[in-house]
Image 1: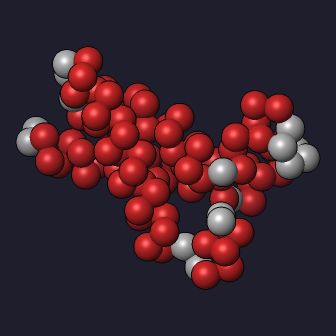
Image 2 (image 1 turned 90 degrees about the horizontal axis):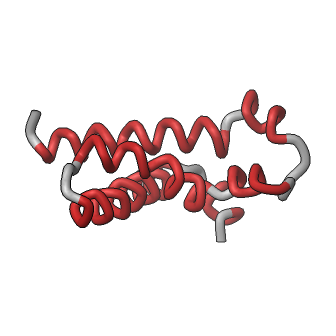
Length: 95
């Protein structure tokens, strides 16, 4: 599979999983109260995308330095996608 396709798939998958964990109602009920311990990271799309992107970076790249760059690129791509698709009220709460 081409590298650009792996990167695209990784960005889309990272956005989807992060959106599920950070924004969707079913998971927000499981998280409990806001800011609760490690699960408090799940409230921030940007923080969560960095965590979710790590395994997808290994799907994109092989060498350690490439994996590091891919990790940042996949997380960054998911964040850009979130900013492009989020309603204005969600964007305001992210700042």
